[in-house]
Length: 44
Picture 1: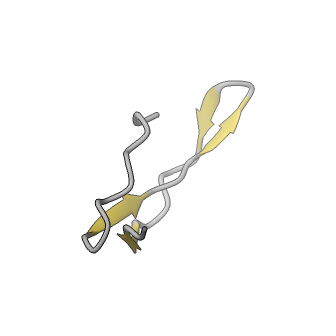
Picture 2: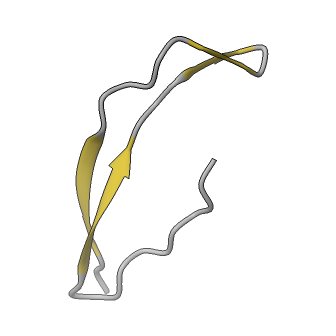
């Protein structure tokens, strides 16, 4: 697990990328998903 990232400063934006994988009893099962991206914008 990645550490938490702070939100961008007001008026700035950042792209965050995510991939998911299934865990069963703390064991990895299957393959990673395709990567998805979201744009996060800092606001006041």
